Length: 195
Image (cartoon, rainbow, N blue to C red):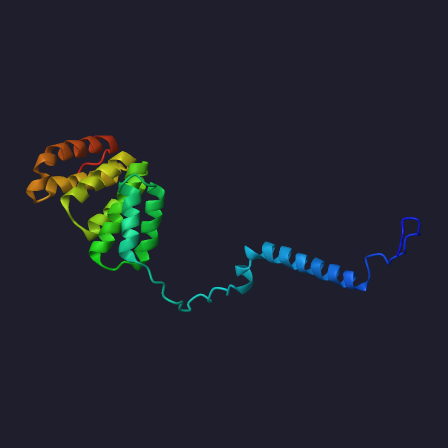
């Protein structure tokens, strides 16, 4: 039995071969854990396939059109993010083929752009909406958006279409549209075509 008066026994540095192997394994395991943690966020780069060459078909993407419409319209009309609603509708456009779906998407895009003050873009979307849904209220929005954007030639064309509109819904607006068309004609110096 050893006492405090006995000289200390010299042990090899590192605690012997068993402790050396154990320490090495713990170190390797720790290094692997750190590497895996650092790699976790970037691991998809290692397994991601490159995109197919141009012109090759890709797998079809399924999308829930009605759910995306509902989310986009919530964002645009119920106080969400106009930009997010626009992005959702822009993502949806390639998946739409029905006239009514396209009109619904262009209506939302036009309203969002108008609310954000992007009148040129709103006018373009309203014009596209009018192509899919030729209704008077859409034509009125085309004229107002072009006018707000300062695109007087586009506004003039739309106001003249309002003047020539055959339905009774245009009656309350005809005189104002004719007056605005005359005003724009004075500004840009081009006589309107005779109607």
